Image (cartoon, rainbow, N blue to C red; front, side, top):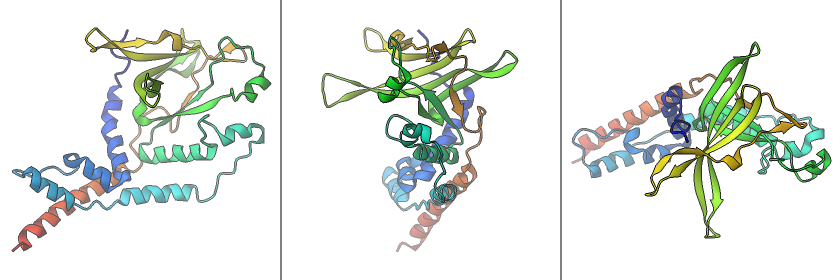
Amino acid sequence: MSNSVATPTAKYTEYFPEWEKCRDAIAGQRNIHDKGEQYLPKLSGQSTDDYDKYLSQALYYNATGRTFTGYKGLIFRKPPDINADAIQDFVDDCTLSGMSLESFAELVVEEELTTSRFGILVDHPSTEGSNLSQAEAEERGNRPYFVAYRAEDIHSVKTDRIGNKTKLVQVRLRETVSEPTDDEFKDEKIQQIRVLDLEEGIRYRQRVFRQSTGDKGKSTGWEEVLELRQYPRMNGQYIAEIPFYMTGGYEFREPFLIDLVNVNLSHYVAYADHRRGVSWTTRP
């Protein structure tokens, strides 16, 4: 049982508002308007009706979104040249969910432009209790695949010095999974924390924590789901490193477009004030 496994680091908490602001700015006016006072503060003494009119007349010109699209277009103005005939199945579907390697590369670029923080886990379906040959495993689609994690889903990343080498020793990842219910047409969404670490510094381990509830349905903390614990292997041997990789390194970085986002949002508020002033002074 743990109460802190789902608690992000202080740095995560510091950068989270910037990630949210960048996503909203890129998404455009609808998202900006939906956030209301978060981006357009209510004026002193302004009623709800007056604010709604004030908000509806505020134009958000999405320069950030256009710049985002332009940069992505420049990067992918030519299709990637991928020479990987030996692993064509992986190139066609690198996530086991139908996403091609080229589409995954576009996702990486999008997240780099938006938050400048992105993680990739190289995972493999569980092979516990099976004795499949490599050919049989490949025929069943039992092969490595990528799992993408956005900045908001990476709660913490720890490194340490092991054997005169800096290694990744623990990662905490937030996930949302669907589980079937008694209603065949409705799934239950469950929040969980996946912990990747090196047990005793030498053996890669995966653990999953979910919230447990007491008699009155209140949360009593986060408890490990023991049946989901795994010790992934490669060629029958335990893995001595965590196969989790972050674009740009493990340190936090300012989002690539944050300066433009701040200017864009400032112009949004300035336009709203100007529009309100014009409306107020020219009304008979």
